[in-house]
Every structure is written in C-alpha cells, then in structure tokens.
Image (cartoon, rainbow, N blue to C red; front, side, top):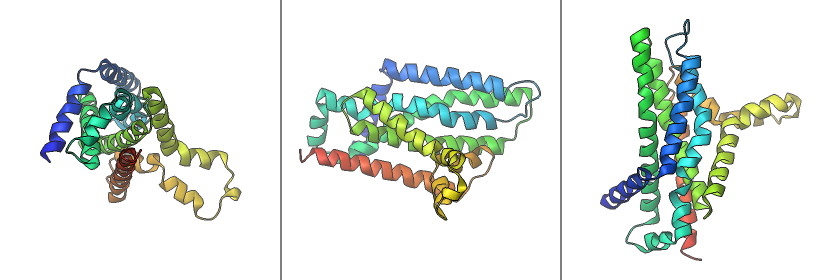
Length: 243
C-alpha cells in the first residue's frame, strides 16, 4: 500500500506542474459554468442542478482524455516506463497509482463546481438529495472515464492518439444505445439485443443519479466497468515485459 501511495503522490505532483492539466481544468470550469448559468441558474428555473449534471456527462468526454492522455503514453515515449516496470512494484500497483492520481485530479477539478450549490442555496431553496446523488454519479462517471483514458494511454506512445482513442471509446459508451435506438428500425433488432445495448450504455445508468435516484445496479455497473478497464490496462503493461 505504501508503494501505491508513493506512486500516487508522484502522479498527482506531475499533474499540478503540467500546463495541459491546468488548461483542461480551466476549459472544464468555463464550459460547465456557462451551461450552469444558461440552464440551471436562470430566472424561473427550478432550484436544482439536473441540467448541468446531464451536460457534464458529455463535457467530460472531451476533457478526461486530455487529462489522462499523458499518464502512460508519456512514460513510454520518454522511456521511463521501462524503469518503472523494472522497479520493485507490480503492474497492478502502477496502474492503481496512475488511476488514483488521475481520479484525484479529476475530483480537484470537480470541486470548484460546488459553488453552484452555494449559489442555488443563496438565491433559492434546492433539494439537496438530488444534488448529492448527482455528484455521486459524477464521481463514479469520472472513475470510469479515467480508467478508459488510462487504457487508451497504455496502448500508444503518442499522447494525441491516446486522447483520440479515449474520446472514441467514450463516445461509443455514452451514445451507442440511444443512437442505435434512433437510427435503426425496431424490426431489425433481434429480440433482447436492443435492451442489452441500451443497458450497456453509460447514459442509461448515469441519468438516474441526476434525478435523485441511487440504484445499486447503476453503482455496480460503473464499479465493474472501471475495474475491467483497469484490468485490461494491467494486461497491456504485462505484455510489455515480454517484448
């Protein structure tokens, strides 16, 4: 555990000296702030954050790949991955530390949005239950997005390719079910396939959080998919030992 914490601190430190990380954070806060002002903080709007929670699912599809693209691809490009893999740490410890470092940075990026809750409380009477569940959904969503970003970063030495790969995977996960349901006639579907595709879509499991519903099935979905993406990342790193 001590090695994981040491590597995690190293990863967090790398984020807070990286200009790209600060650009991603600023971009996220500006875009989220604009949508919050237009959707949830306008005269006559309900005192809640449902709209901004829904929109953040799509904003993060663009932001998280930028945050995670350097995690492992930069290590491979600079050659430090070889030193890291030959150090007295396991591949699992390396991946967990990379994940925790990126996830903690994501949470730090998300923290300033709590000012939205303060503003709603100052000018309205929000229901805090849906707000709390919405933030829980963002925490789980961020964990999944970060794990996929790490997986994409482990596949290439090029940071841009890593970001584009993560973006493509996240777009498919977030929008595949609704898009297929819209463009493919129902008569073309094999019985049960439509339901399976929709249940595999991130949007299906995320939306309830913004509505104040915390379903154990949704929590398990995010935790399981995050763990699976990290497992694949470990396997990619293990394969480097045999090259």
